[in-house]
Length: 525
Image (cartoon, rainbow, N blue to C red; front, side, top):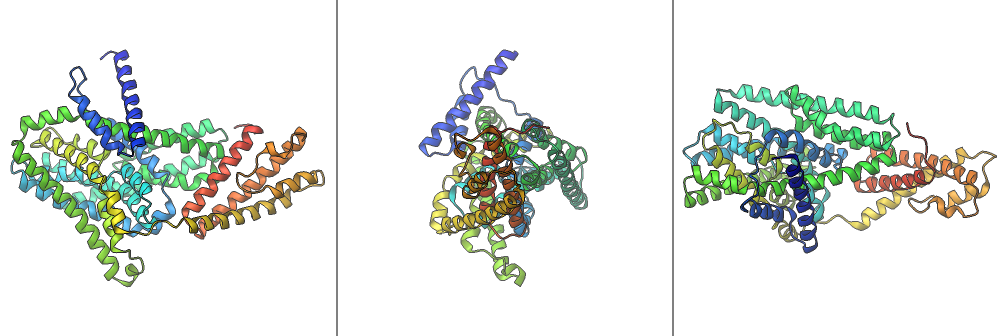
């Protein structure tokens, strides 16, 4: 395909993604399901080029930014607080699913080997971080449930990919359980190490940058560099990217400029929107090719229906069995766990959120050519992704039936106001320290009166104010904002407020500081 045609198809691809997502959003429908349906229909139109999946492009080009975008919007403090639950699901649940679904697939498809069945099970085991985050945020689930879902979906990809690599090795050679365990330990340790080091280095560089353009450029390459370094060192690129993203998001308010943080949020929301929705359209565009391969190598229509039903049943049953067993462990186990237990309804909610997506799409095409029934397994993975997306449509009704306690908006409002009051007090204390005999008393009075977040811009300081007076007000307000941000970060470190209040207050400060810089810019470095 010539360059002009390639660019034309890319433009059409993006326009279709944006148009379909916008339309179904207005109708209240599921964008992923609609995009898969549109892509599937288009794939059968004569003249549409055959979509060929390049696994490395997805693993190295699409997965890192998607994971990074999800990680920088996730609270590191919440992840730490729920780390035991998250590890039980991201490691234990994936391993249990691989074994359960692997044996079920092997029994349902006698023509494939057990190693190939385990490889397929590893492909379909992890849930999709982006889809789960979107679902959790939209349904107003309890904060603990949201944290567990987000943390588990961010980290389970690493376990699944290690299991997939072990299964692929078993297809072409012989591996031992000791080798599998060693590979997993190396992948985790190296991934955590690389992610931590990269996060620390990028934070160090960001603390010395004052240009939002340079800061944004640095963060745009961070997930790709992190993933590549971890992969070269035989570590988990998934874990490395997630660790780096969590660390950078936690440290950003203390080291990056307000303008850079605002730009980062908008840029990564845009990248996440385009990539995640484009992936679902891409999944649909694979339908004709995947279906042709399944027809050519599969056992027939009715056996395929039975196989699909059996695999989906095993997948759902293993998910529910592990999550509910974990819930029972927390409710009936040792005292330390009982103190951190959650309700049965929370367990059902976690077990029901099992949407598959980009990792499953990429991983299934990593199966080597020697894999028995490779094309047929690719079709089954496609069925699992689509079925999980359709199953996700029922999740809102399940959540409503469970009557889970929604986040309390009154409590969140009270927390935001209390935190705001603390920050304002810190800002006023800073103002007192900054006052000199040369400062106009009217300037100080106005800053005292209008010290609330986003309540004041320099336009309201008076049209008759002189430029030096306005510049002095801008300097003093910047100093107040610095102390207000420090007070908020201290409250976060001490764990005195929930993360939504912290994030809301920090974003309000960023918006005001950005507006302040637009009127009285400081030199960039």
